[in-house]
Image 1: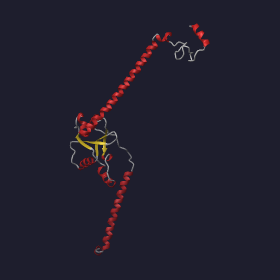
Image 2: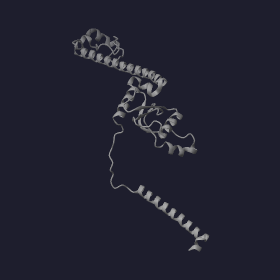
Image 3: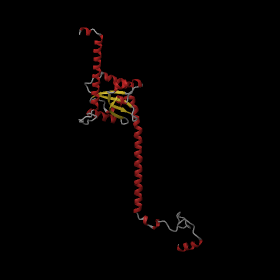
Image 4: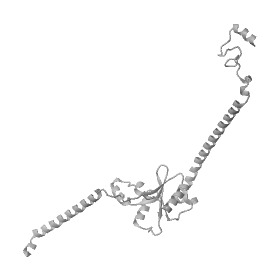
Length: 251
């Protein structure tokens, strides 16, 4: 055995055996993992759960009241509104951002995200690596980012300025006035048209029920034509000379 240990081919054979064994083991492990992913579960031990907890539901309600012209989305991943500017490193940014999300995303009606909100529990570390990546990503995409502790956020009168900033809140407030004025004018016009229609119907009903509508004095004289001019027949034609004596005798 001592002379075999000094032979180069002996150590080469052992090295090949170790490499082959490692490759076979890795192949078997990969095959087992693929088989586990392909296996259809026998029982679906799942149940539905609400998107919001009690604090998130309360904050969502306040956001809807403070920002009626914006769309509020919940539990949105950063990859839904952030992407790599270059295709060459898209996979790198995908792996880096796929696990990150924000509690609420505030969007314009066209779907552009203008602000992101996170509700953090009191014990969460603000300086974690994932938190720093999130803040840097939103800053690069020019999306305003704010955080609040659970159950602690500004009162409704200050909510718009907190979410959109002073300039964004000032720009959002005037946009509400024209919409409100147009809506009030439309409602006033509709109400006026309804009242006029009701009054016309009431006048027509009173005329039909009165004795004047039954009096022949107010009825159209058959001796007059369609235009009410004497000397014309019922169809509006001129009377002949031989018909005029009969008309005078009957008068």
